[in-house]
Image 1 (cartoon, rainbow, N blue to C red):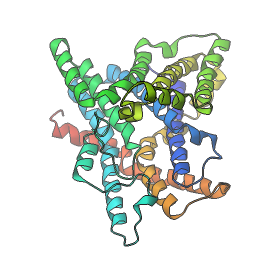
Image 2: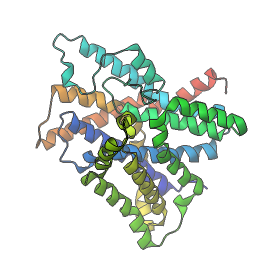
Image 3: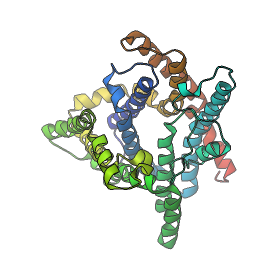
Length: 359
């Protein structure tokens, strides 16, 4: 079963919206006032959207278009490193330039840490979230979620392309390297994969149920956010479980699971909504594809920009025009950067295929 153009367009819309929410949230955190945009409050929820979409898309594309594990490795590595490698190089270069300035004050940059060989190697191998590794990519804390996704890919690939004792061995090794924090959030990725596997994204609902299933999950996300239910549960678990803080970015897993499940329902309802609504997304499929086409670059490149701009040209509350201009400028810059990153995906695939001998 192939994805309908309308659903494909809507998934692209979700992907860009999530990346945009992360940008707005980090702008506000870095001193570029964006609190006037409600979407800025949902930067963490946006990462859950990425995980669900990733599970859905990777499962769908792997089971319908990928023929063997070598091809899977080439596709995943090219997709990841086409953006991750330039991002790592730029972040390290910017950090070295900043540190060389005589008046450099590291306290003005919340994501700054001295460049080290281990932090760089750890970032390139996506080990920053494994076990109690405290490494992070300088000036780019959002890199953490990519470390989760890469190990989701590894674990899924180890399961899907092997069987018998080899499957058990490879999955066990991957799980051992990934560590508890990554494994704890993998069910969110898996529920997206389950949706693709079950084909419930094409299930038929009555119009009333479809609208309820479409808007209900969005209401739930807002409800959790406004009432701070995620942090309340997190703080409660702090008291109950010694060392709970070591889970780092997986500490809100309870509400993340709820949001992940709700998002699956949200996606599943789309195909049962009125055709006019679906057709609107299909009509502008090119536009959503354009935006989604640089969302990965936007995610991995925006934080160094917001860090530097916020430290040197802060925007105070109420300066809506200025913050809007900065957001648009960052979007344009990331779109231009994407021509050297994810829009070079075919070249990366060819190079990796030759390197791994799969051509």
